[in-house]
Length: 374
Ligand code: G3I
Image (cartoon, rainbow, N blue to C red):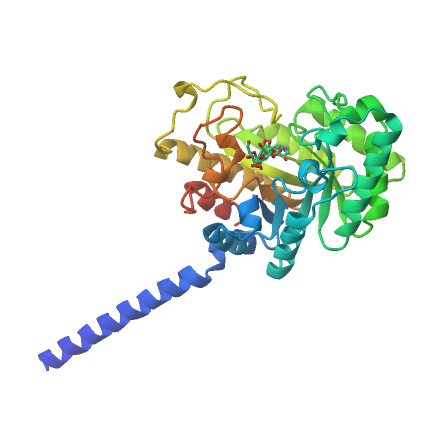
């Protein structure tokens, strides 16, 4: 009898172990809690910027991760003027068409980035001398590109980074030749070309009071002209150890009172020191390399990863609190190794700004972002 009982209990124990093992493997495969887009399904869209390799589906690990975690994607570079419109009469839609097809195939929304930006302009634009020619460029560029993807993409960053830090208009080729109305004009042209696409103004540091005031003025001007603007993108290139939480919350509230959607469009929380102690994301800022400015070249210390996780958790808790005003949060890249912050503002550093590490493994910050949705 004793022998039979022992056998019986051994069998029960073994079968329980098997059930537990099979449950845990099923959990891994199907648990919606481990997907950002599923976890945030009824809160806001969660996205990532894709580089060319990812758009061309040549990075299998990134591809799997994008499909699992993101409900919206933005091309990091390939819809910028110098790539999509290299000459007056020549457009190159090859990669832009690919990301739109990728989105459609995988049921992932696409946001176009960006129609009018002073940076990454094709050389022919930089050489334009007359106001009339630049006006013709503005009209042709926006009309041709925005109409091609109308109804196929979710929205456009129509104008990107048109403000200085003090909230005045940036001294760009567009401002100097076309005058301050060029922004309203850009939205007017986009509205005509893309009636079925959301239209956004996108910039960095517009959570900061002076620049925010400039952005509010600019948005009100577009609205007063009777032109459509659907949302504002706060880029969100912050440092993990000094996220401006107070200013972010004020911005969410103030921008929402304009009746437009609030989005965080290029989020990354870098962990490295910044040579100027500034949060500007101006791609033209550069500094010399020195080892002191690259403290984690051999790996991210646990304490820094934990502090970053706390910052991401606090930030997403704030986003969730204001989910009625926020429509999207997009990370600027898929994994740490692919982030622009490894090369800016100092070339050759090792930064860790995203939720996934260089091997596409979840970092502690992933867990706090998931937890913030609860
Ligand atoms: O594709 C060329 C390649 O052919 C060439 O050999 C190589 C040599 O430098 O350059 C490659 O182009 C680089 C491109 O990224 C693609 O990797 C450019 O030099 C480099 O300047 C460019 O940087 C991008 C930057 O915008 C400027 O366009 C970053 O990847 C991109 O993350 C960054 O994104 C911007 C947003 O659009 C606007 N907000 C700020 C944000 C960060 O700066």
